[in-house]
Image (cartoon, rainbow, N blue to C red; front, side, top):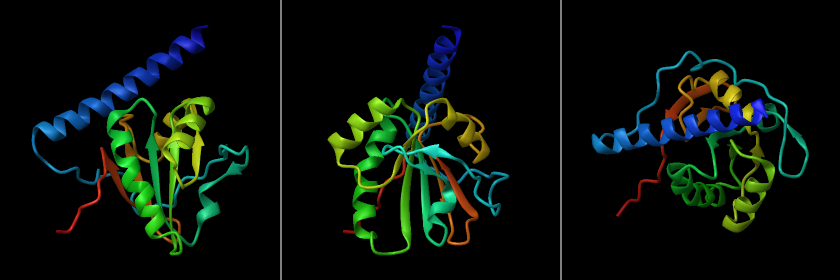
Length: 171
C-alpha cells in the first residue's frame, strides 16, 4: 500500500511540476529552450523496457536514426497538445532515418487505450515509475513533463527540451 501511495505522490508531483513549468514559460511569453545538461554529447542511456506489444525495447534498437525520445503522460495537458504534431511528423518522415519514441509515465492499460484512441503511429513504452528514473538519467532532474531528448544517428544526445514542443507552421 505504501508503494501505491508513493507512486501516486510521485506522479502527481511530476505532473504538477511539468504543468507549472509550462505555465510559467507561457506566462513569460518565452519559447522553451534546451536545458543545459550533463547528458549533452554523451551516449544515449540504455534501457530495457517492454513496449505495448510486450517486446523488450532499448534505445539501441533505433541506432542509425535520429531519435526524438519523448517523456509524457496521458494526464499531462501539455503532453497531449504535442502528440498530434508528433503523429504528423512521424508520418512525414516515416521513410527517413527518423523515429519518435514515447516513454509514457502511466500504466499499460491507460497507455493502450490512449494510443488506440489517438492513432499514435510511433513506438510507445509504458514505464510508470521507471520513466522517472530513466528521465533523470536523460537529464530531467526536475521531473518535468513533457520532456524531450534528441539523439543523433551515432547514438549521442544532442538536445534536451523541457516543455511542450510544437511544429512551426510556415504561412
